[in-house]
Length: 492
Image 1 (spheres, rainbow, N blue to C red):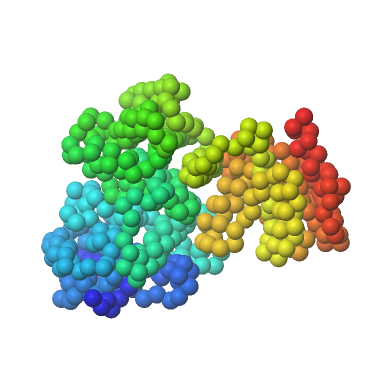
Image 2 (image 1 turned 90 degrees about the vertical axis):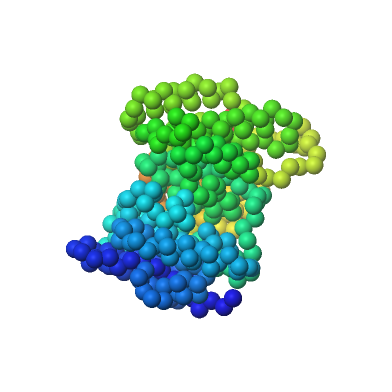
């Protein structure tokens, strides 16, 4: 089948006094998405906008590879949306070598109305929730001009970035006629959570996907059906790890008289016990995180969290964290990556097993890449694990990785032989704010590596323990001694 468009957006114009507000929100959203898609794909993108009541709406739906559905109040109030989507679904049945229909529909949820009012075809579709986002022209300009860091701007653009990345992936699959594998090698069950933790769940999901994991459930779990336990167990059977986020509220109650959060945790615990009691090579692990900043809203939620804390030590392959979100993400990255390493065919000799390596985060600008490689080789040869920044990806994604490295490393070194003074000052401020990012333990050592005569010396801290290495030429043990002796003292 030939497709005229990569993407089409379908909306309902509506009427009444909110019509202007809906139109402005829609225009701003499309502008955000076009801007981000161009950043992600590197090419200009066109998205035709089709009004739900247009005579050619069915034709336009059928000639688009992907269909964005703007689910706002006017869309849900329309008496033809359900009918049009049902006919659209019927028209797709005989088409082969394309993505499954649910993967071609991209619902943008801009309404706070309940899911029960959604068309049947998308009622359990996770979609992209923008219902709490107030999208204003100022927020668009802040991103384009300064990559603004206010919470509302950050939330908006991260959500748009998630959508753009998914569109890029789906179009690539579409072109290759590939479908998503039922059980990828790396699959994580990221449990549904309560509304207060939706943004945190999105952060974790985004990071897992960036590292190549498939995140399930990929559809919303029903709460009003006896089949929900079967659905959850089926998802769990595809994963080796489950992650559970516990917030301030107990959550929506299922037919089992438990919240969906409680039920997922209970079934994951039972699944873990079955897998780990059998003599299988593969184990199943649970990571449970309780938000340290919450105020429990109900007695039932207090009982639920108390039971988790009491029982966790007796559960195999289970970890409980009550720490800042950045430490949770660092723990997940370390734990999940380790679990998904291929098994070694033979055990290593006992004498070759050593303690976990000390990690050093090298912070540098592109201009100092050559120097960073030299320093990295020196540190690796001395037995350190070296973390480095990346320079490719969305700004917020890179910033998030930078903060995660600052939280998870044992020590850090800023290399500024060619980088300018403003860049150096910014990175030093990041290190000063390291505990504000969520780091709890003290850092072992901080250093700045400069070139002789760089002129940066007057802007460096002198009273906070930062080691200054001002050097040109070959890197030797003597040059690096002020930094290295911090670890010798620590080991002794």
